[in-house]
Image (tube, rainbow, N blue to C red; front, side):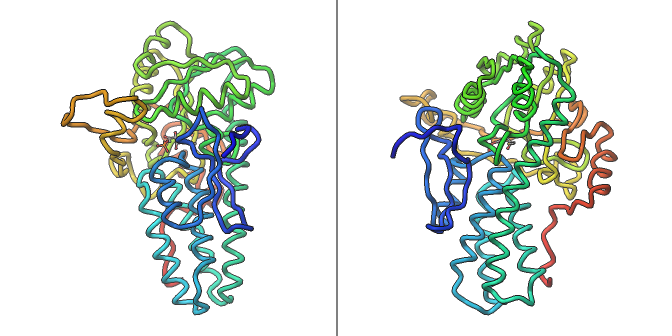
Length: 368
Ligand code: MRU
């Protein structure tokens, strides 16, 4: 396998000729840019679970292509049998990671295709599923770019920015969410100074965001997570931009573990804290952060992964939640593709959904 030029390739792609989902293996970055071709449902499930493809929107796109490939393999031409097998595949993929709502959002959207086209032949439904999966990916590019345009209205040239984890191009189809205003500003010569924290334990900030931003020519400084209050106190941060995995109807936002710590520090130093959220990441069926299922990950990610040898005593107890919830009270605004929502988020998010006739993430009615 040869290393590829990271900037010229897509994070997630459908390879029709080989009936495969193709991803950049993000666990190999930044040292190796490697494309992997995934054909079986197990390999797609594993890629999501192991964070070879990661970031809420990219997980959604991967799941959409994954379920299309599963549907394509179904042999039966009987609609009910096709639906039953489709739903088994859907349940399986949906169980890969619990917090990023884009996973179930994309799978539900694909399921709607089979529900609303009940009268069509199974082969026609498969064609429509392919079309829908491609639309999900293309829309994501538009969504990210638009979030970037709204985000940029909040920024001025030469600002210092902090971002956490990777809500960048690697986590989406293009541009990223939290990085989109940075990329668009960079194109206009805004000369941002961007600080990314390394994001323990899986180092998405160090391995992915620092790499992405530097490859784009952005002024990038890497810090450890526990240095966030210091750089804020130094006056180097004018705004914080983060992504999210699920936003509740009241504005509480689940994102990579450590986000709420950055939000608390930002509140203390009076720095605006922005959450970039495609509406596909806003779960209006979830009333508050307390309803969000937080994924717990294996202990080895804390004690040994990325180290040459284990760095903690054998047998030590480990608590490894992948996400935390930033309270709505610590969020200055939530930037969506349909505009910027300000507190009270109960009202502003509701009106974004209402005014743009956006469907919620609710499971489609199986009776069709
Ligand atoms: O566990 P990860 O790496 O999938 O977590 C990703 C994040 O927390 C991102 O900030 C979030 O998914 C938004 S990506 C645009």
